[in-house]
Image (cartoon, rainbow, N blue to C red):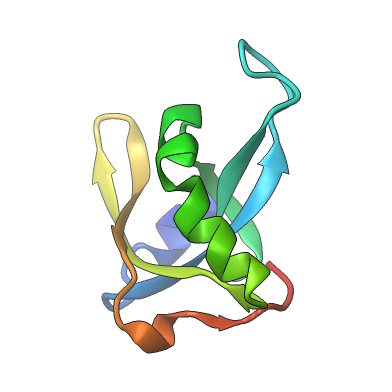
Length: 100
């Protein structure tokens, strides 16, 4: 929450990168899902359902040697600060694979 709060006033679009992580607890423990990164820090995870829905599109970008970036923003609601992803901002929003 502190990290998101510090970045909440960044100008839109904020470039969030997507990477894979292994779920470490719950019903889907041991399965792979997508994590959302901002400046190399994990700021959230896609639900298992959202990962399944978007897996092939994101995986094809990764297999092409690129790291997917999505445009998004940070908003505050009753749960605290939340990451809202809007999708690729423009074709150049895909960048060569590097660190998360």
